Every structure is written in C-alpha cells, then in structure tokens.
Amino acid sequence: MAQTNSRSSSGSANLPSRRDFLRRAGFTAGGLLTLTAPNLFGKWVDHAVAADQRAYAVGKFALELDGQPAGFVHTVEGGAGVGEVATTMMAQNPYPDKHLANLRYEPITVEFGPGMSKPWYDWISATLNMTFQRRNGAVLSLDFNYTEQSRLNFINALITEITFPALDASSKDAPRMMVKLAPEYTRHQAGSKGVVKGTLSTAKTTIWLPANFRLDIQGLEQATKRVNKIEALTLKFKTQSDQVGKFRETQKEPVVIEIPNLIITIPEIDAGPFYQWHEDFVIKGNNGPDRERPGVLKWLAPDLNTVLGSLQFFNLGIFKIAPEKLEAGADTIRRVKVEMYCERISAAFPGFV
Image 1 (cartoon, helix red, strand yellow):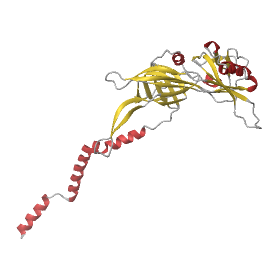
Image 2 (cartoon, one colour; image 1 turned 90 degrees about the vertical axis):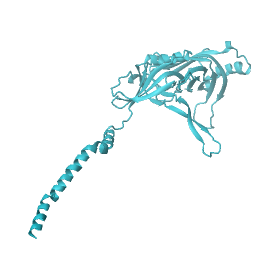
Image 3 (cartoon, rainbow, N blue to C red; image 1 turned 180 degrees about the vertical axis):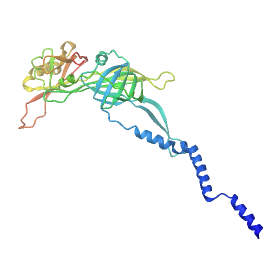
Image 4 (cartoon, rainbow, N blue to C red; image 1 turned 30 degrees about the horizontal axis):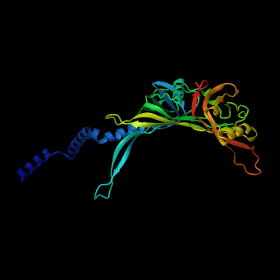
C-alpha cells in the first residue's frame, strides 16, 4: 500500500496545475489572435477610415476650358455615361433577355451669367456664326472653402444649345444664360483638394438686370422704345453621331441649326407701325427679302448707356400681331404681342468679361 501511494503521488506531481493550464491556453489563444487579427478586423478598420471621410456640401461649380479657368457657374447637370438597354424575347422563354447595346453620354447643361472668361464667350459667338469648335474642359465641384472635391472631365464637346434669357421691364431677378454641351465622352474623378481661384466678378453679376435692355428694329425705332417683354431665345444645333472603328464613343457632327422667333410685347398705343408692316408683309404678300428688317437687342448696365452685350438679328419678318388676353375691367395697360421670324443671330459680350 505504501508503494502504491508513493507511485500515485509521484504521478500527480508531473501533471500541470489548473493555473499553469489556463496560463498556457491564454498564451496560445493570444498568439493565434495576433496572427489572424488583420483578417478579422481589417474590414472594420476600413469602414472606420471611410467613415472619417465625410460627405461635403457643394458650395460652387467652376468651369475649366482647355486647362484654363473659365469662371464660376450657377448650375450644372448631366454628363453621365449611359448604357442603352436592349431587350430580346427568346423562344420558349417567358422572361426577356436584356443586355447593353450602345453607349452614350448625356449632354452637360450649364447656367451662367457675366464674369466668365473671354474664351468661353468667344466659343459661344463662334458657334452662333456656324464655326463649330470642339473643346476639352472640366466641371469642378467645390465646397464652401473653394476646395476641389471632384471633377467631371469632358472631351471634344460641341455646343448644341444656347438659351438667352427672357427680358421683362418689371422683373428684378438676375437673368441667366444656358448652354448645352455634347461631349464625345466624359470621365469622373476625385478632386485635387486644392483651392480653386476663378475669375468670378461679383460686381458684374449684380449689374445685369432683365429690365435694362433696348431693342431697335430698322424703320421701327419709335415703336420699339417701350418694349415691355422679350421672350427667351433658344438656338439648337442638331448633331449626327458617327461610329468610328472599334471605339465605343461616337463622334458628333453638327448638321442643322434651329433659329427661334423673336417675340416681343409692346403697348398697343405704340403698335401702329407694326400693324402697317403686318398689313403689307402678311396680308398683301409683299414679303420678299428686301422687305425683311435687321434688328439689335442690347443688354444695358444700370446707367442705361453702357452696353454689356448684344444680339444682332438678321432678316426679321413679321408673321403675327395680336392683342394680349385682357379681362373687362382689368386695371392693366393694353398691350399687343408681335412675333417675327429670324434667319440668323449673332452675339457679342463686351461688358461681360
């Protein structure tokens, strides 16, 4: 019995105690955790870093043209690359088969006023003169500190639409021009995080008012002295897409231009010369090119003498004159609306730069 007890006691001495067992198990688990930590927590760390990159509020949009600042704009829209979805019905399959066919890029719509760069206004003037220019540039999204957060680069863009704002002698809202650009392709990328310095002139954005304008039409100068309203003018340049070789992006070629009508509103008391022109040109049919008239619209500074910009109208021809709708007893001035076609429009912006 004594020998047995001695042997038992010796075996127990060689076994690890509970404290030793737990200590060794802790070391082992810690080592495994150290080796596998990147896999276990890597995604959590990435999410934490991403959460630190906070969203930003857009404070300004800036425009670049051929690598040079072109000024700040009011609104920007479009420019996304869009895949056109084609649908095919397969035999004995009730569900349609869908796939992407062509790739197209949405037009970029820009609203702006005075204070842009001279090359920007020159591009507009050249387009109106049917001298089409393909330009590269970018739209920059800035925060309120003018730090560039992102940019949309556009390549080989053509101007396909130009809108000149409506003018109203009773309006105080700041007018804006609008241009649509049709790029061959665009690319979106992160901003440089640098501070953008543009050419925006706050003074010039406040002096262009829709009430300050003057319209002159040859032979009708007295009748246009009190023009009350001029409707917005939108010129459209239609383009044709041309697929070239293996490239997915298509080249765009201008094919035709749409010229808007000039529509004005004047007091009925001044409309006599327009009624006479309408009688001769429309009713009697004396409407040859020699009876068409040129005209000019000038945007004026508050002093009503300084010309900020102008539109030149070629070959105006009257085709309609009619009183505005008026209810009996209404306390308003009796006015008439005059509509004239136009064959060409050119623009100059001497006071906008």
